[in-house]
Image (tube, rainbow, N blue to C red):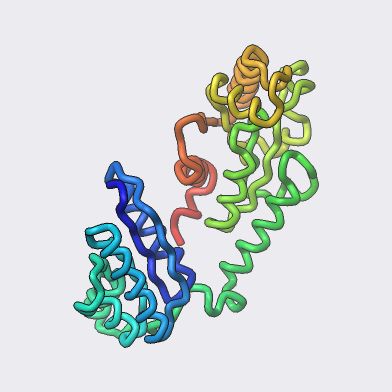
Length: 274
């Protein structure tokens, strides 16, 4: 769908609208232009967005797709009125209103899910988890590993850092990560500091060709990035994890979300229930 725009309009950050909208759009082989319009919490702001949507409709010759998460009725009516020439998909009407009927209670119509974050224990746990993951990135520290929920191990550039941060930010998981280095391959053992915590370890591996491509972007024409070295490191890392009984998966063709969910399922299944 070339020359097609999708709007994500919210009275909060727009993250919910964009996450849900992108999940739906992923079912189509299309790359539309994305436009996020957060904090649309007044009628005046809503009118401005409608004018923008209508201008895009004129320029593209077709309806823009508009995902909205708006709880203020006056603001919602502006976006859902006939004056708006987009295809408006109202998440509030689709999900919240049917639940109000089913639960026989009115929702609190709260604007944004972060408005009382400072009072939320879950939010504070996420902040602590992020700080923990940053302090234990790339084997920086072996302190407090007993309090880690998961310890990611694998060769350098296999996806450990983004996965550990995603686990912390999205799930409040305290994730440390340890890169396997040449000395580990020579000893044919995982780092000794991980020995007491093998049950918490989860390995990431990667296709050596893909690893060489990634490393060449960082250190071109180096031994570190050479294909033969990448093959050696991946082979040795997988052998070490196999001997130590550490489960692993390949990050080559998996998203961060898929990797994180697999780790939760295998290491912390309790975190899939909340």
